[in-house]
Image: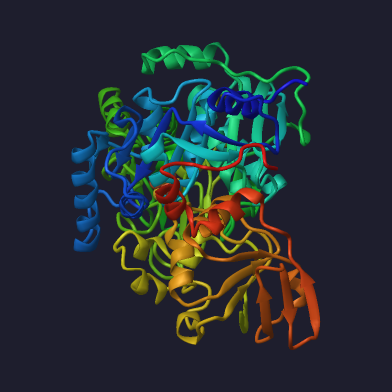
Length: 421
Length: 168
Ligand code: SF4
């Protein structure tokens, strides 16, 4: 019987012939924690009588969620992480390095065929690189650091085949928002999503990260993409590790299989307060916005900043809108500085904050006021997500966010865009 | 376990269970517990009594992987969470930290109903309405972890994972 990507990787990592439904204990290739989850994991590590992590070279901790620290409570937890990282000799990314889900792939720690866990739900992101990567909690992170392993139930796979070509002004973010709307917030719970079809192959690796990032918003355990030449070229540029591509067998068994035609897709927007509350941009165009956010692990990469800059260059953000830009990493920041992208954004009126999560999770860096509307490139729009439960969050592509920042209200980006991607 | 039902809807995410603005600040679970469910029901933390139940619809615990979510519920004194289905990271975290999670048809439960939850025999009795609801059994791997008192205890006891493979 043929195997899916998930079955192949979990078979390899556990040294068994694993199929959907099996339970395996598997060796991990990389393990990641961020500042919201690592402090509890350090506590659990001690509770397990842990003294040394199994392999420090395979563990990273990242300070990105509240970076730099907004108060003394957070500072104490950051200090705990620094101390642990130094004691254990693990990779450590302090304030200003960037968002964990940018850093793990950018620094070459996830390659095709890998099994990766992270104590953050959007760890699904590296599925774009044909790695099986999934989010866990702090106790699982502690067990993983201590033993180098974790248990997994091998998931069934839900294949989503995207046919056709994305029209101009429509991007990976629009595609994944559309899928979230169609599949709903629990449509893929306990399953691995496998994104396939020419619309997915056509995406850049950056665009695929956006897809895999949001797999968890449909409940999925992983958001996998097959390995192709683009993947291998990207890996060559970012990692010295040898890829072990794990592409699905032609006779792999899928628990669900659906096809979508993207030829007519229009820009999509998720309305408050759920990610699957998705409508075409035309339906909400004109809704006033007071804050626009460009960044996060979903859309804070160079490609995203360039796209926004292509719309904002030489224009001015609407006086009623605060545009906050958080580059996904220091490298993205430097690249965007070098090619003039950041200058264009700042001249247009953007406020650039520290590489990291920015205002995404409501600890600092742009908490909206009561009754305000925010349009953001992030992946979640839950009530209170950005720190105020009386604000309203809309999710969209970098192009839609840029067009809306100019207009002062939600705006269709297509009039600004000539080329599709 | 006997207690009163507190009703919530579908897709209760971990941001609603405990907001990011609190969870990044402290490891003091009692303090987090005082803000549990705040964005959905500001009165909940003060109203809930030890041994009461959170009863919700589909996809409870979706969103962030924060383990502070099951811990805040646990420290608020909640005896168990009953839902039609759970998001996978929350489900794992709950078992790892020792918060009982029960999958059953929660349409049969209204706010204020008195419930008796029998985890051993997998039954929920709605005493107010006189109905007994069957419970979807926990996967064997989770039973093994629960039997050891959570994942930290499991690892401490066995010096690593000691789970029977291919049990499902
Ligand atoms: S950017 Fe937002 S979604 Fe991504 S890791 Fe940070 S807080 Fe989570």
